[in-house]
Image (cartoon, rainbow, N blue to C red; front, side, top):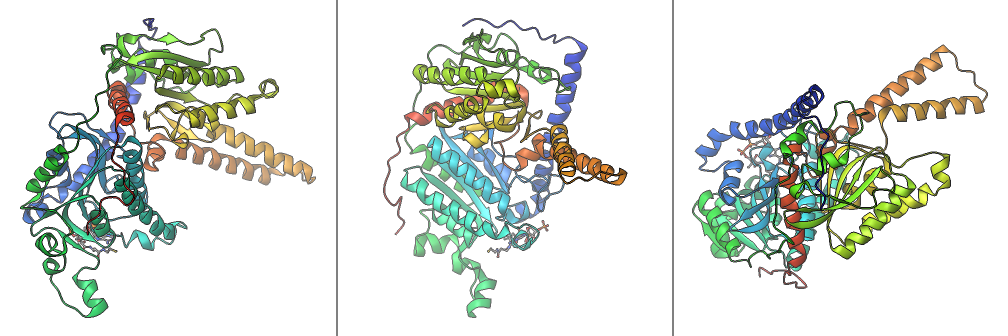
Length: 547
Ligand code: COA
C-alpha cells in the first residue's frame, strides 16, 4: 500500500475554525443524548423505591466491562411526536451492538423511564431496524424489556395520516421475532416489569425468558382492563406475576430475585451460545500515520470548499496506506484498497460529482473488490450525478443506473459513512440507507435530500415562470413576490429536512458519530460483517417452541 501524504494544514486557522464548528455540532448531538439521560435520571427516586435499576444501569451490567459498544439510532424521534428538545427521544430504546459474555450481540434496553417505555411509531421503526441488523448479521438479541405497551396518546394523534398503520408495523416486529427464531438467531429477554398486550408478545416470542420475582407483570390485559371487560377482579401478581409464569403458565424458564440477578442469568444464558467465529486478518493491524483526532477539522464549514477524500482515508486506515484504483480515470470518484484492522477493504469516495466515467470506474472497482473479497466502505460526499447535455450524451442515465445496480446487488458487505453532501441519486449509489448497506452512519456535517434548497428554489421558479408563459400570463409584482416567497419556503424547508439530526431522527441512517470515532466504529462494524459470513445458526421451520 502506498502511504498517503496529507496536505491538510492542521495548525492553520482554517483547520481550527472547521474543528470548532464540527465540535459545536457534535456538542448539539451530545446535548440531546444528555437530555435523554436526564429524563432517565429524573425517574431515579421512583426506580429506587420500586427496587429497580434504571435502564442505563441495566445496560452497564449487561455489557462486558470495557468492551466496545456501538450505539445505533440514538437520535430516533428527536423533535418528533411527543418530543420537543430531545428529552423524550431515542424511541424508548437504548440499543446497539455490544459484547455480552464475550459474544457479539444486538442489545435492546427498553427505556421505561421515558413515557413508560411505550410503543409508538418511532419505537416500532427503531425495533424493525434493530431486528433487521440481527437478521442480516446473524447476531443474537439480548433484550431487557419493560414497556407499558401501546402509547395511547400518540395513537390518538390524528394529525399523522399514517398513524393507523402503526398497528400493522408493530405486528411486523412480532413476525420478525418469529422469523429470527426460525432462522436460529437466539433472542434472550428479561421481563423486568410491565409487559402488557403487545409488550407481552415481545417477551413471549423470545426463545429464552427470564422473569423477575414480584416485578414481572406479563399479561394480555392488566387488572383494570380485565375488570372493565369481564368483571373479573385479580391482582397483577396473580394475573401475570413472575412466580405464576415460572410455575404455572410456563411463559418463562428462569426466575430471578431482582434486576441484577436477572441480568446475571441473561449473561449466563449468552455464555452458553457458541463462541463468535474467528476471522483472521490478512495482515497485522496498524494505527494510521495521521491521527484520527484530526478528522474533527477535516470537513470545511464552507460546503463549497472541496474535500479530498484521501485526507479522510489517511486518518482511518491502517498505516494511512491506500492503493488507488485507476487514478488516471476521472479524479472525481476516488476508488482504492486499504487495510482496516488488517482486513482488506475497498473504499469509494467522492472528490466531485459522479460522471459517466466515474460511475463506470466505480462499477469496475466493485467487480474487482468481489474478486479480492474486499468489503466496501463508502465515504459519501456527493451532490449527485453530474447533469448537462455533454454527460447525457455520454449516457449519464444508464451509467448512473448501472452504478446503483452494482451497489444494490453486490454480495460484498457495505459500510457507509455520510461525510457531507448526500444528495440525489448519488446518495443511493454511494451506499446510503436506501441501498441497504450493513450499516450507514453520518457525521454531523452530513446532509441528505433529493437536492439542495437553493437548487430546488431555482427549479420551481423556472417551472412556474414557464407555466405562466405557456398560459400567456404576465406576472405582476404581487405574483413575483408570491413566487419569491414560495422559493424561500422551499429553500428553507429543504435545508431543514436535509440537516443531519433531522435525518437521523427519522432513521435515514443508523446514527450520527463524532468524526474522531470513525476508525473505531468502522473497526467494530467491519468485524461484525466479516463474522456474519462465518456464522451458521441452526435453522428450523417454526422457531423455538414454548409449549
Ligand atoms: N400511553 C401513553 N403514555 C403512557 C402510557 C401509555 N400507554 N403509559 C404511561 N404513559 C406515560 C405517562 O403518562 C407518564 O407520562 P409523563 O412522563 O409525561 O408524566 C409516563 O408514561 C410514565 O408513566 P407513569 O404511570 O407515571 O410511570 P410508572 O413507571 O409508574 O408506570 C406503567 C408505568 C407503564 C406501568 C403505567 O403507566 C401503566 O400501567 N400504563 C398503562 C399501560 C397500559 O395499559 N397500556 C395499554 C397497552 S395497549
